Image 1 (cartoon, one colour):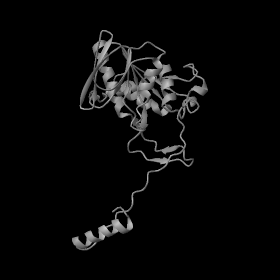
Image 2 (cartoon, rainbow, N blue to C red):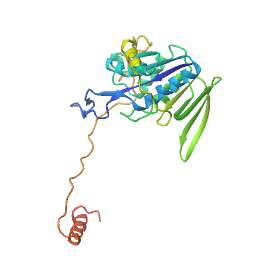
Image 3 (cartoon, rainbow, N blue to C red):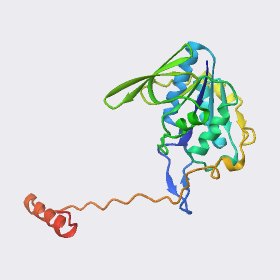
Image 4 (cartoon, helix red, strand yellow):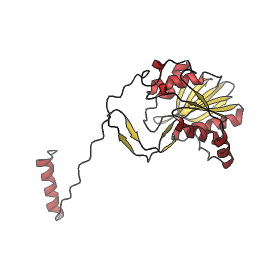
Length: 260
């Protein structure tokens, strides 16, 4: 059973993010972490491997810095890791990213693809389903349980007011969410193995992609402008006894704010 896990390195939740001077880019503090939901995907892949043998391959698209996320996957127990690194991949949207990932996945036979339900930096949840579409595979999103046997998979997903059970033929793609499992903490032996592991790399040429198909040129969504959120108005404290303060508050709401 060969399982491919798609992961993403995202800005650390505590990293500082500011709008760039050009208004269409972001200046992000150089603090990064693996996407939370991808950890559930890796853990599930490792559990499938433990039951059915085979191998787990972790793939990410990004800069050289993204190797850290791949090494985390290897430290947890993944067998192989591939970094999709090329200037042609820069500034791509979900569509362009999914196209590149699907080409990389298709290079070798696989049975299951797992990835996080969404990346918590942009929260769009679009790449996984689009990878499935590019590969012509069934897709089950936000799984809470996964059982694999005899070339088929039975997944449990949360729906409004309950849960739904879905059965699909393999190969298929599943997106993981919190509640699927409890990701393991890598052992020191796994960390040491990850530090020594050779990370394979692939470029646009390796994947048979033209420059116009990837990155910003291949994107369907164009960023026009980033705008900061509106600042909250300052809090106004009304002094005095409760009765007088209440009367003054009503006056402000009626005469100043005109909401009453």
